[in-house]
Image (tube, rainbow, N blue to C red; front, side):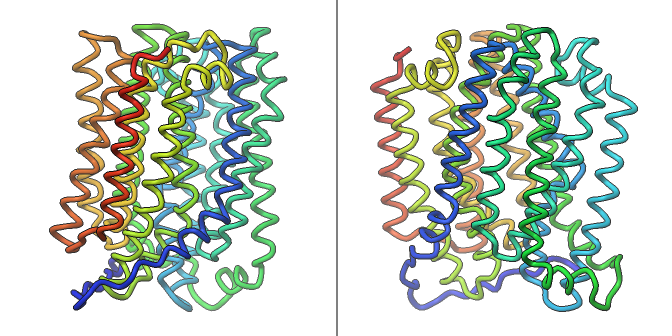
Length: 467
């Protein structure tokens, strides 16, 4: 059974914008997301101060390998699980959740086993030397724990537990901050495996927390897992596969492209420059995560449940307005203070990261906007288009990064490629929404987006050469 499509109706007039649900969702998750970001920044600061750029580069590479492995272990199916569990009802819903449970468990076992048995190819792909391949088998433990966390978090999202989801991210970041000092000290003594232990500790603590959170929904979970029905449904698997296959390809393309770009930086400029690039990337991504995590648990289910074009367009315009203004404010603040922020959150050794940050901040605003416009493609179930848009964007990233590397550097080319990637992604998503879903943003939403872009570009231009 293919994923259900959203009904499209052309209303006589647009429904009034309602910002209350968006602001409510942001208030529930925003504070926790901010706290999580600060704790993550503290963990990064400790790693950077004690271990230096090389430690940050290795930790970031391990996290990227873990991300790619988790994408494979879950089929990148968190969104598909949330959508199916939210849209289906009764026995169909129970069989869907059970089937996905089986798929997640089997894929996680396969991926973790592969990391244990064949670590060398993954290490080589990431640019690690032969000695670092011994870290990969141990990385299978946090991969398995994170896979479980992804599954359990999707169930919480489908159950509407937005506040509890926010606390989970806070707990994971607190674990990273709490374990950063001993891990960094151990790394400085020549024990890089301590960084894997840090990732394992954070994932384990988050896993225990999500089990506690799910226990409060044991009645509903009992209906899903103990009610009459099959544990394996071919129809549910096909429905999941319709969405997750595209998401898996997209996720693997994203992780693979970034790993390849980072490998090029490691091989041509060394771990220190890679660590500086990671500092710019991390500082840039943290504020984007703060904005998007504040609305993502609300946005997809709301769009998926829409029963008219007016309702769907109202959700899109409301989220676009709020997120554009929030992102513009955060990006402008970072652009103004980037040398100071790099010293505070990292160290003086990361000052050259300002040259990369000025580009990634521009890309951040486009990323927030394009993400908002890509969710309705998911909700509409048009996975071929979703995948095509993502692959085209990653292709632009790889091409621009590789093309500019000889003239500039690998790190500078990657930073500029990030801007080009999300400019392409935003353009393609906007064209799709206009032509296929007949979406035209509300005047207020369009004005807010243009204002935000003007602020970001203006502040960036004024502080472009600031180091």
